[in-house]
Length: 85
Image 1: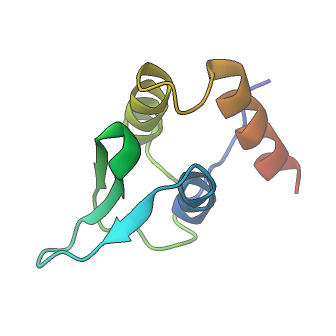
Image 2: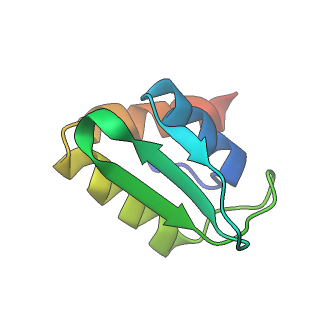
């Protein structure tokens, strides 16, 4: 079952659990880095409770799975738990 709404805050919590850190920027984008896997994720300036656009959720999922930071099933499961909370 796919979650209906995932907020930027939800994704941010998952990224932090996976070992990402938030990077300072001079612009408005949100940047997260995972040094061990040499992964950088960049998002537009979302408000914490703003729903993620499907394209940003899909690109984050693709990057995390391709870098073996999380399995597809674990990613979907984490989002399902968030949506049930």
